[in-house]
Image 1 (cartoon, rainbow, N blue to C red):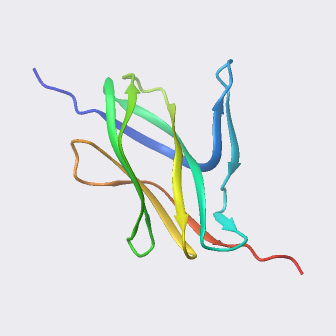
Image 2 (tube, rainbow, N blue to C red):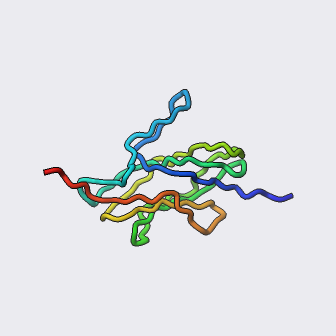
Image 3 (spheres, rainbow, N blue to C red):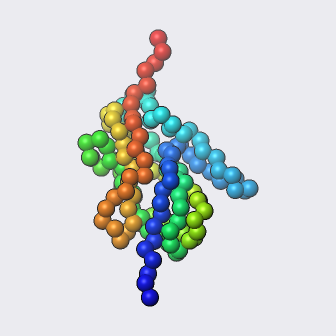
Length: 137
């Protein structure tokens, strides 16, 4: 008997302030960072959510670690032992990683990555630029 390796393929991901699901199943994304994470000044500490459209490959529970790194490769935040229930089908679903603390010290790029607990290599979920918004004069 062979064991199928559990995998979640990320089709695309968004960074937002909040993500909610209504009773009717519709999802609401609030404060989507569409063109980048722009702030009036840096450094800044924020808590974000990662909303992902995914395809499940395998059944059971997917155990993952998360890390966020800056353009210099410095670790910004790390989340360990996250668990996601999986249903084996080819229909896309969604996953939300909530309450990710981010400390942005300087302009550049942030890379959000995850890996399965049994895997040593990290997979990039999304990369987003970070900067300072200029005030209109």
